Amino acid sequence: MRLNDKISIITGGASGFGAGIVKKFAAEGANVIIADLNLSAANELASEIGQNAMAIEVDVSSGESVEAMVAKVIARHKTIDIVVNNAGIGHIPQPLDQLSESDFDRIFNVNAKSVYHMAQHIVPIMKENNAGVILNVASTGGVSPRPNLTWYNASKGWMITATKAMSVELAPFGIRVNAINPVAGDTPLLKTFMGEDTPEIRAKFLSTIPIGRFSTPEDMGNAACFLCSDEASMVTGVAMEVDGGRCI
Image (spheres, rainbow, N blue to C red):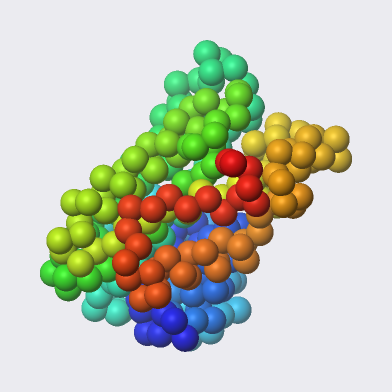
């Protein structure tokens, strides 16, 4: 019960890596808030977990939506201990000069500006408590970019830099900030990164991962749990690869 009674918000928590983090946190005793644009999926997962789970619809690219979500959490739980900025989107592999401006804006609004919105409304609460943990789910793409995913890679590189800067600024307030960098996982986003889901393309992706498999939601849940627990009380500003060795 490493996260016992910790009030934890996981954005994009209804599916994929987010769901893995939600399930692990709940198993470790946390009160989990599944904050997702897909409310029906969030409700379904909350029902599966039980009374320690709460589903809230949120669009993390909207400051007003994030503010409303935070208000609901405070109304029920009075505080917020942990935030996992997991919500994210990608784009179909394509030359960097062919991605539409609207797709570019959507990627940066969801992957980058969402971290700003969450910080605006949650960091003041954590400062008041002189405690808190923020975990950003970035990507190996922010460390070792794949071609034809340039603007996705850039958004995750932004996230890694933001993590380090946030950690330095917020450390005096008792707030730790870290990131995890997953390699491609067998989640709904996988097809987006590959462009097409075929055995041949999967084999090509797997050939770049020394450990020989895709990452799983359980892998992310385990890594996130450690970084958000008191076991990592001396760890801040880290962007930890959870990638089976891809970035080596």
